Image 1 (spheres, rainbow, N blue to C red):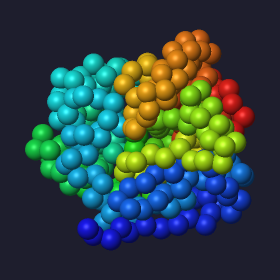
Image 2: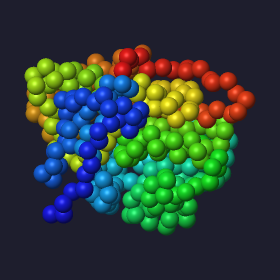
Image 3: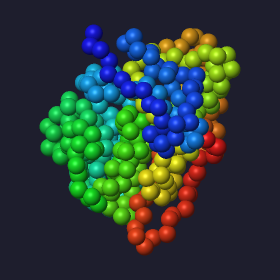
Length: 317
């Protein structure tokens, strides 16, 4: 087995603070341990030990897009256009409320299905994707997709009217550096849309972390440590403001009760289903305790006043 390349963070990359404390969660994968931590200064949760280099790149091979795409919660393959057509059209309908068929950049564009649909609707599209297998498929569709990180792509400044990151910011080695680069390539007045998991914010996971903390034990996830950052609404909004964006809205949603993710006992699965059943209507009614979030932010224009936060996350950390 090839040795894993990892790094240990001594400070929070989101805010730079060294005030870090361990939390009751860790990944175990290929004989390595990846403990989670919390920044007490900004509230960001992240993996204190993270995969890097070739190890990180290998995690996003073709098998990822067949088995673990969308955190394993979709039975469809990442290349099945019909499976994601309704979802992609819904996103594009929303984008077009702000920017009618203009310049779209998708960071973490996977196999290119959203970009393909956007192009069909008249958008000028560009993608960035780490996985060479996913890039190869996107390019086979005739799409302009750069292989590597957003920084590797070296895109020109102010080049896009809307930048979309769907299920990607939690995977990048430096969430603040990535979002800063998004701001650089975004035109003044343009929008950033970030969508992804906020798993530790949900009722079941919050109670689980608190219980395991009280017992002096860890929640152990025996799977690849894909999520380097465990966002919550407030920490995600704080990160966006730190890089100079005006937060317009944060909308939370809750995945309906269903098959449990990861290894769980029958009792754990039963308790989580009960909590999720309670959680779902609370999230729908009050925009709280979700396990998915959609953040909309805007790059200020030189003459514009900051826009108010329209839909806010109701949490204190």
